Length: 236
Image 1 (cartoon, rainbow, N blue to C red):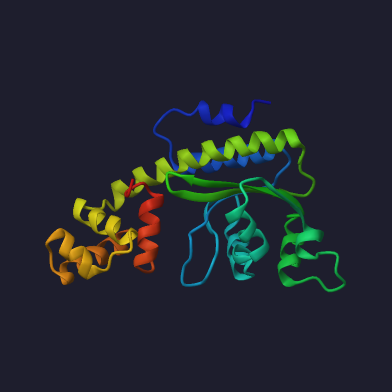
Image 2 (tube, rainbow, N blue to C red):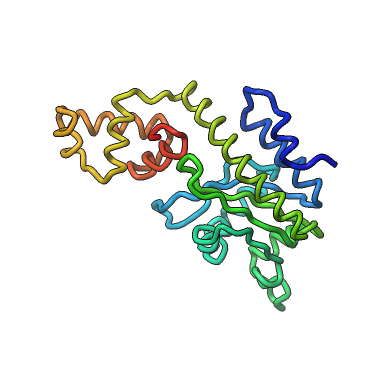
């Protein structure tokens, strides 16, 4: 069995999210994981602290149910991933109380999918991209050697995923130089009025630039647009 890094290093450019999702799936299965996913971890959003699914081998039904049951906002997991750089190893009984006489709907969902044990590998600050790889399965290999290999894989994977998403977004929704300028200043906490003074433009014009950038990136608000632009490499 070749190591997970070998798969990534064997890829020729250009790579895309579809190819990376296939690599993620194959790597997980090498270690006995049936479920593999990559999440981003935005700072905050209107719904509070939560992860956002980027690529995975999950079925559409499981992905919808995972979010419906609030597992993308599970405080123990999300809070730990945001503050601890080490792999987070878990099992369904300890983390989700699946052995309770009346398990929660979320635990029942995971049980039905054999999502019984796994590990999450946080990646912080890579090209302004905070995220985590998630691997889970029925009886996976969670040995120290596996955790070390997958942690290194996580850093390389997110670097390639960030590059792929940046290139895709530039093709489909390119931000203008002025839109990037406005987002950079918004990231520094400047208001539309302050940005207008710095760029010698009206507050209305600045708001139009920020609204256009928000629309191009399908962001829910200005803060979300700044976070996405940073993740995609526009603000570096």
